[in-house]
Amino acid sequence: MDIILFITIIVVASVLQTSTGFGFSILATPFLLLLFEPADAIQINLVLSLIISITLLSSIKKDIDLGVMKRFIIGSSVGLPVGIIIFLLFNIQNLKLLISLVILILTVLLIMQYRIRNSKRRDIIVGWFSGSMTTSIGMPGPPLLLYFSGTDTQKAKLRGTTLAFYLYIYFVSLITQIVFAGTSQTVWISSALAIPLVLIGLLFGQKLFTLISQNTFRVFTYLILIFAGVYLLIDSMM
Image 1 (cartoon, one colour):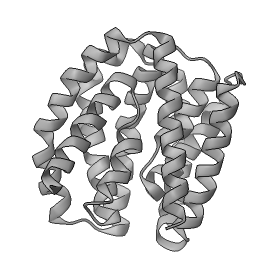
Image 2 (cartoon, one colour; image 1 turned 45 degrees about the vertical axis):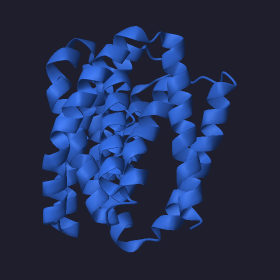
Image 3 (cartoon, helix red, strand yellow; image 1 turned 60 degrees about the vertical axis):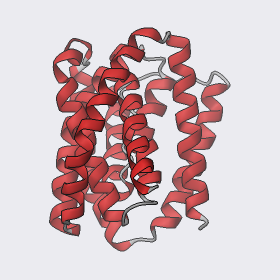
Image 4 (cartoon, one colour; image 1 turned 135 degrees about the horizontal axis):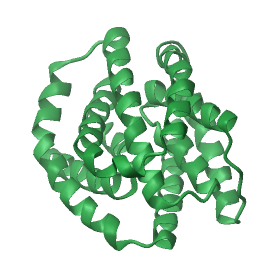
């Protein structure tokens, strides 16, 4: 039963990540926590997300907004050490509760057509939140998704910029996790076994990306955000 659940998690999350540019950590992490210890689940998520970004780099490079990505990197570089401190020292359940409420409130505002303008300063701030959430709870996606949705970013630019940014954020986060929290054979054996499943997800995800419209893409983002918010809310109360 655990094997079937593992296969389903990886394939579905890979399809979502490939077709939208986000979603692997949002969808995979909650369910991986059912099968692995928290540190192992987060590191498996980081390894596989990194593999996806590396594999897709050649096909997305034309859609990358280099200016935005650089500012995300600057902001996240400050946020990453903050996140690992939170992971090691603070009550993660309280953090999840706070994040879940923020995600749900902002998602409701987006559905109600609330929009913001992007700026260089906001790019850096969003990068900071993404970095801190990556090393603390293994979820860099929600800040980026909320920001891009609020600025009505086109789906190709959103996917390309996000996946390229993940190359940096996941690599640094993985190294940070290993150095400060350690690692295990479980992480690397499970990640190796999951690679064929990730490749299957990549094939289906690329096909799905070409089929969905901008409006359908936006609905996907709202559903993923709601799922992330509700999951974190429930998890924080357990």
